[in-house]
Image (cartoon, rainbow, N blue to C red; front, side):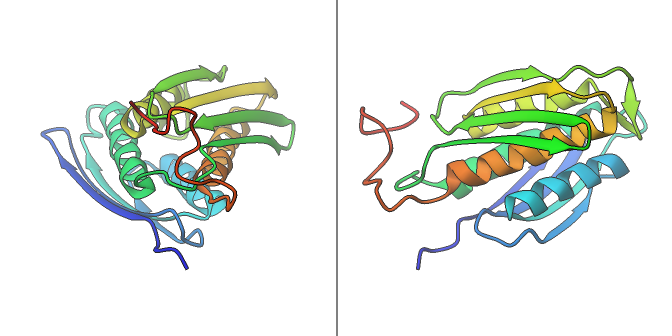
Length: 199
C-alpha cells in the first residue's frame, strides 16, 4: 500500500492569506472558504470529481475585487499539487477528460512534465458568474499550471451556459489530473525516455 500523497502549503501576503491541505489519494472530502461562493463551488467540484481531499481557507482583499483571491489560490493549489505528487515515480503523467455537462462539452488534458504551459480556450459571454469574474478562469488555471509545473489544456468543444462552461472546466481538469497522478504498475521509475521529468 503506497503512502498517501499529501501537502500543506501556506502563503501570506498583504493581499491574501491562504492555507491549503491537499491529499491526492483522498475520497473527495472538502472544506472550502474563499469568500467567493461560486469559487467555493468550483473548488468543491474539483475535489469531489478528482477524489482529492481539499481543505482551502482563504482571506483575500475582496473589497478590491476577486482577482488576488482567485489567482493566489491557484498559485498555492499548484504548489500543493506539485509537492504532493513528489518524485513522480510510477505515475501515468498524462491525463485527459472529455466532460459533458448538459449542453456543454469541455476537454481537459494534463502532462505532468515539469514544464509549465497553459492553453485555455474557454470563451464566456458574461463578465461574472456569481461574484466570480469569468476572466479569472484563465488566471486561475495559469497560476496552477505554472506553480505545479504542468502542461494544461482546456478547450470548450461546444456549449452556451457560462455556469456550465466554468463548472465543466473545473470537473474536467479534476478528472484529467486524477488520471495523470494515478499509478500504473507497468511504469518503472518515471515515464520519460530521458529518465527524469522537469529538467
